[in-house]
Length: 593
Image 1: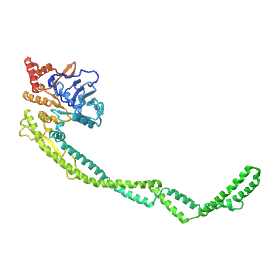
Image 2: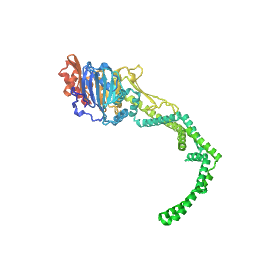
Image 3: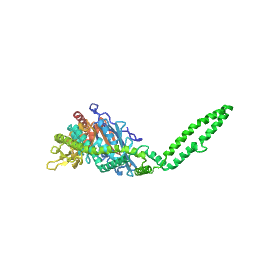
C-alpha cells in the first residue's frame, strides 16, 4: 500500500466474478495514487489483474487519470496541470514484478539490485516547474523513468501509442512470435564480439604510432645501457679507487712513516719496547705483577713488527697511476652522464634496464595482437553476416504470417477492408569488417504498414492519423502477440471504442477480455458492450462542493455494475427494463469470456 498522510479510502476491487478470476502470474500496476492533478485532489485506487474498465461521464476525469499514468511513465508535464491553490502534484504507482524478465530488465536499467519484486515509481511537479522522479524512494532522471515506463507499459490511445510503434520493439516481438530468439541470440552474440574486436582494433590502431615510437626508444635505451655494462657496486668501487689514486703519494708517505716509527727509525717503538722489556725483567723477581708486565711487553713486539711490515707493503702499493686514474675519471663521467640523462642513480638504472625487456614484449605483443585481431575481426564479421542472413530469412517467413493473423482480427474489428503488411527492409552491414554500424537486433528494419481504406496509400502504423484505427490495429496486433512479450504486462487503451457502435463493442470487449488472460488491460470506454466484458470495473465521477470540483474513482460491485451499464445504455432515461438488459449483457459477456 502507498500512503501519503490522510486522504480518502483506497478504491479496492471487490471479487465480482469468482469463477472467472484469472490465475496468470504476471506483473501489474497494483496501485495508483494521484494528488493535485487538475480537478483530482487526492485519488488512490487499487487495481487488479485482467481486463479493467474505467467508465464515467464525459469530462469526469478519466483522461486525467490516464494522463497521470503518462506522467508516471516519464511524459513531459506542465505546471498548468497542478490543481489551483496547490504547489505540487504527485503521482505514485506500485508495480509488481513477478515475471523474471521484468526484474532483470529493471535492474539493468537502474544499474542496481532490487530488494523486492516491485517498483514504486513517483513523479512530482512543482509550481516552479521543477520535475523530479523516484524509484523505490531513490532519485532517478526523468529519462530513466521514461525507459522504465516503456519497459512496463504499452499505452494506446487517441494521441499516442508507445512500444508497439517502435520498429526495434516490433522486431523483438516478431522474433518471439516466430520463435527466432535463438537465432537472434546468435546474431547479438556475434555483434557483441565484432564490436569488442573493433574496439580493441581501434585502440591498438590509434596507439600504433605512439607504440612504435615507444618500441624504438625502448630498444635504443636497452642498447645504450647494455653498452654501458652497468654492474652492481661498480660505481662505489671506482669512486673509492679514484680517491686512492688521487692521494697515492700521501698514502705512501703515511704508511712509510708508520713503518719507520714502529721499527726502522732511531727511538722506534720496537726499540723502546725492547728496552722496557729488559728493565721489567730486572725487577720481575720483586713482584709477580711486574713479571706479567714484562710478559705483555714481550708479546707486543711481534704485533709491532707485523704492523710495520704491513705498512711497508702498503707504502710500496700506493703509487700514482695517471693512466688508470684517467680511465676511472672517464668511466665516472659516463656514469654521471647516464644518471643525468635518465634521472636515475646507477642502481636504479640497472633495475630500469631489467624492465625494458618486459616493456618491449608487451608492446610487441600489442603489435602482434593488432595483426591477429585483423584476422579474427574478418572471421567474426563474416560469421555475423551469416547469422544476420539466417535471422533475416527466418523473419521473412514469419512476418507475413504475423500480418495475416493480425488481419483476421482487424476484420473482426470492422476493418475488413484495411490491409496490414509487415515490411522488412535490409539494413546493409557493409563490407568493411572494421567500420560501419552493427545493428543491435539484426540486419533488418521492420515497418508495420496499414492501408486503412481501399485506394489510400499504405502508411507506417506509427503515422496513422486516426486514433480509432490506430488503437484497433494495436489491439489486433496485441491480441496476436499477447503470449510473446516477456516483460510488458500492462496495456492501456484510451477510448479504443471512439466512433464505434454496439456490435463492434462486443467484439472489442471480447478481444480485450482475451488479452486480459495474459496481460493487465486498463481501458477507458464509453461503450457498455465493452465494459461488460471487463473482469473489474470502476466508475469515475466529478463532484462539486461549493466552488471546488473534485474527481473520484470507485470500484463497482455486481449491483453497481448493472446500474452503471444501464446509465451507459440509456442515461437518465434508464428503467427496470434497461437494468435487466444491462444484467443480461453482463451475464452474456461472462459466458463469452
